[in-house]
Length: 219
Image (cartoon, rainbow, N blue to C red; front, top):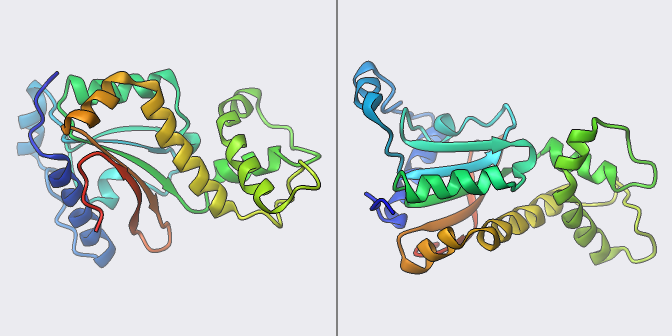
């Protein structure tokens, strides 16, 4: 296990400060020059690993005003946990010394919208690989739907709260990551790793903390 360079709290504050610069239009664009490129030629040492949705409107280094080598970024549609995702996060923590994992969801998520449509009585026909990939979102859809609707298992897209589905899926994603990795659980227990679940507002550009595990001060 590589020793971390920042504490989880320091890493979290670094993200918050960078996102504030992005929201207010005061970006510094750090670590984006030839000197930084040369520094990284021999290896990488990201303090933060980010697992998020592959949505094209969200570029991690931009919304946190960071640069080359600052973030170890893993993305797929709907931030769906798979073995490759867990392996990548474990690599970031154990081999690269990352002190913080960010699980980043966002509003207006197409993956959530599609999962809701797949839960209707007449679901759309979509590529089989996409349907299989989005299967882990379906429990979040059903949980939110049955909180207020008990007469039918078929979801009405006009009635269900898509943001609530996204929030529930984010919660389940964080739980799945922890359940899937003893390496990450042990790092959290030792105090060397923090994990934060966050939501990004596409219109405002702001990242909001939803929940945290480990030595992260949330107030």
